[in-house]
Image (cartoon, rainbow, N blue to C red):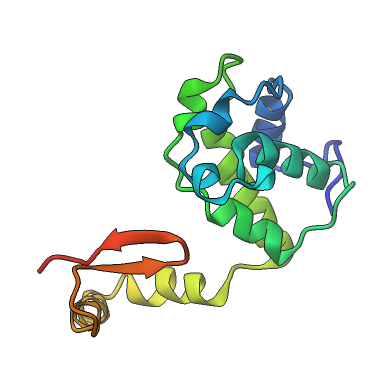
Length: 153
């Protein structure tokens, strides 16, 4: 768990500086694509800022659900552009992912993909090829609630 004192990493300090700017006005929710799909306050930018604040103040224990909430963020930074207080959410979301990964660990599938599949062109090509032959006949596939175009060859 993390305390709000000199034990904070530079990333956590940068996140805390931005968190303190947030006025909780909610304008960020209107532009967040993840919140538009889930309609869960915890997945809105304002909700994630409050979640990270609670984690940093040790009011909340880190969990895999918290990791999932921050990992579902698309890092589009529309919330940053819409923020009247000037919160640099790019510093907050990346720091939150690092903090939670250190506390809870990284999801196996994500870690495997980033360390083994993505850097290996041969394995990547096999994965893309498997994605193309998926039965169903349409040109898209689903990942949780998002529909994505199938990779083009």
